[in-house]
Every structure is written in structure tokens, then in C-alpha cells.
Amino acid sequence: MKRLTAAIVTCLLITTQSLQARTINGTEIPDTISLPNSDINLVLNGAGIREKFFLDIYVGALYLEKQLHDASTILDDTGPAGILMHFTYSEVSREKIIDGWNDGLADNLPAERMSAIKPRLEKFNSLFRTVVKGDVIRIEFLPGNGTLVYINDELRGSVEGNDFFRDLLRIWLGKNPVSTSLKHDMLGLE
Image: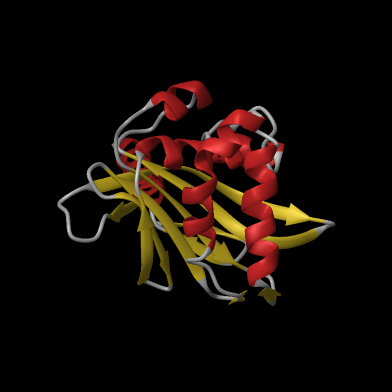
């Protein structure tokens, strides 16, 4: 009986730990987030570290209505979703952030599509500033509101269209992602 009780307690502890926030590279990643001004809660699909030249730049996390592990399914979805970028590097300039968006999209979209989204991409790029260690960029898609950009919980603005948000997701989940290991982690693959 004591062994059974110990086994049950151990299972409960393991289950409880999996429901709590995760810590990646010293950054706490919540298992769920609530979209502001809505009653929508999203669950963590997966999270990992964006590295560049052996440096950790940010911890990226993908949130969806329910966990999905196939990039195509996520990219074809029309529901609410979010990306959190917790910066761990000392400073990333506005210019580097914008170059990252532009390069990531150009690597994953045909030239015609890049031309079609150019006005919205320019608006999106205008919403960013230089970020420092500890800053959090949150990019969310809420049907009817478009792509909303927050930096440290301050709404910077929005860009219309689900298609624009899904194009942005290709930076992490497309055929040429910014990092294959981060793609793998955001898809929640073991």
C-alpha cells in the first residue's frame, strides 16, 4: 500500500510540474496566455532558443488554440495565435529586427507575395524599436483585429489580415525557417 501511495504521489507531482510554466535559458515561458481584450486563451505549442553565431538572441514561443505539431496545418489555420519573443541578448537594434522580418519573409515567400504584402510589411516594421535583454515582443493574431504587436505589454499597433500573420509564421515554420531547431521546438516535437 505504501508503494502504491508513493507511486500515486510521484505521478501527481510529475503531472503538476508539467502544468506549470517552463523555464528555457533562464526565461519563464507560461503554458497559457490570454489575448488582451478578449476571452481567448491560447496554449503553448512549443518554445525554444533563437541562436545566431553561437549567441542566444531570444526565447521564442508559439501559442495556439490547441496544440498542433504540423507546420502546414498551423500555417493554414485561421484561428487566433501568438508568438512571444523573450530577448536574452544585451541589445538588438530596430534595424536588425526589421532586417530579420524582411529576410525571413523573403526566404519563405515568392517575390509576387512579397510585393503584395509590401505596404503591410512597411506598417508592421514601423511598429518596432530597439530591444534589450528582458524585453518581450508579443505578436498576436485575433480574428477581426489582425496582427497586433506589443512590446513589453504596450500595444504598438496592428496590421490587418490573417494572411499577413500566417506569412509571418513562415519565418519560424516555413520551408526555410530562421532556425530549424527553433522550428522543431515551436512545433512541440520531441
